[in-house]
Image 1 (cartoon, rainbow, N blue to C red):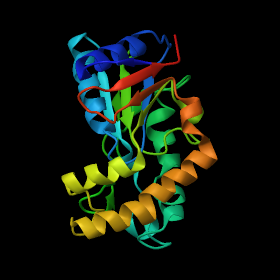
Image 2: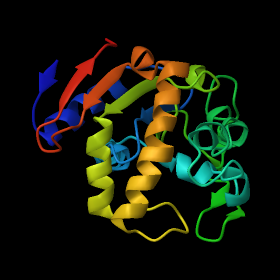
Image 3: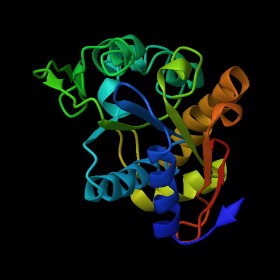
Length: 228
């Protein structure tokens, strides 16, 4: 395991991206629990890759949600609902991961849902260069239905209780809820953390990661590269 500054981590991740050769756009999963720092890390990596001349597609699981009524049909605080009902994985594969994968035509859409209006989206398709990199952040990305659709798998690991602290600091209440500490605590302890425990039992995501980022200390992260 290595430890260093954030810039050193991002540089190492850029090296990991550069070490993978595919005949199609490279599909990179950046997985981990809520508030682990996935989006920030993906954005930092995108900056470095673009500076090196790579064409980067940034996308997130939050743009592949089902409508709110379906997400919460088991209840607002249901862990099973979070794990099984929240994300439109079929659409994710159909409009993004498969077109960018082997045999795909590289015509993709990076979103199918608008969380602000709780409505479906169908933006015009774009065509990715063959050497593009998709940086896709989100939860539950290494589950069995998706595991084979990634060319590089990064898992951002943070103790669950630390994610609660970060969520409180950021005011990360669920969409449609008030961002107060009580609501955040209830959402994390009843829905998000139990759903992560379901995920770990079902998919063992750590076992499938090519790179594990230990993001407890944001300024001094540690990392383990399992893929040469």
